[in-house]
Structures are given as C-alpha cells and as structure tokens.
Amino acid sequence: MIYLQLFLSFLQVGLFSVGGGYAAIPLIQSQVVELHPWLTLQEFTDLVTIAEMTPGPIAVNSATFVGIRIAGPAGAIIATLGCITPALILVSLLAYIYDKYKNISVLQNVLTCLRPVVVALILGAGLSILSMVLFNDQAPALNVIDWIGAASFAVAFVLLRKFKWNPILTMCLCGAAGLVLHTALGIA
Image (cartoon, helix red, strand yellow):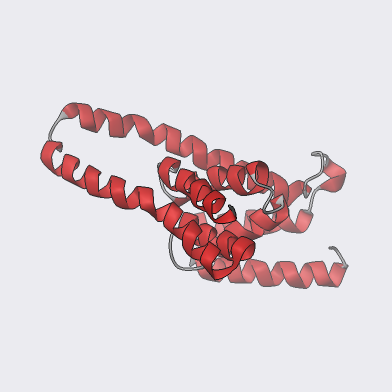
C-alpha cells in the first residue's frame, strides 16, 4: 500500500509540476507534508535544501529521498518512477507535437501565457520557505525573527544577484557561517 501511495503521490508531482523544479516545490510540500504526513515542514525544508544541492532535478531528488525514508530502496525506486513517468510520456508526445506544429501562433501564445503562472508558483514556494526560515514556524513578529537566517538570506541574495557568485560556494559559505553563529550563540 505504501508503494502505491508513493507512486501516485509523485506521479501527481511529475504530472502537474509545469515549469520545472521550483514550481514542483509546493506540489511536493502538499503531498509529503500536508496530504501524507511523511515529513514535517522543517524536514521538508531540509529536503529541498539537499535536493537543490545534489545533482539532478529537485522533484526527482525529492522523490528519491522521500521514498528511501518512507520505504527503503524499493520506495526510492517506486517514488522516482512515479515522478519521471509523466515526463517520459509527455515530453515524447510534446516533442512530436512541437516539431510538427512549431510555427503555429496559437502554440506560441499558450507558452507565453504559462510564464506568469510559473513565476507565481516559484514565488509562492519561495515565500513559504523564507517565512519558515525567518519565523521558524511561529506567528510572524519582530521578537521571533531568526536574524542569522535573515542575514544569510540577504547576504546570499546580494552575492548571487549583484556579484554573480557561484551558488554552491555561496551555499557552503552561508551554511558554514550559520553553523558557526548558531553554535557560538547557542541558538537551536
């Protein structure tokens, strides 16, 4: 039964995550935190961090990690297959259709209309994670802000956008700085 739940949950993620990995984050969260309480929100945030750091798509990495956590190696295989099956079918079909009809204006208009939706999905996921980082699952207030997390976000944003730093280096430096500061200040 758990294998079927894993397969169907990540089949939905694979089927409805239009726009790539970041657009899949709210769908994954809905499946693994809200619908099936396989992970807490904190564990989910850690999962997204690890899925971004490891090679490969976020949704596939998340499926593999959740699958192995819930049902071992077989669960990892089943969840990953659930995640990639829609893409295998849809990409093959869409490649054929796009190649055949790529010069039709209706197709170009549909693709143009999907862009704002993808941006909204990414923004929603980003704001959820930022809220969890800043307020640690508490009601938003100035006295509960994780100032180290807020500073890490601000520094990483500036380094990545303004100075075009390497994202891996930025993550490693911010992670190390957060570890040192949280340990030194005794913050959990």
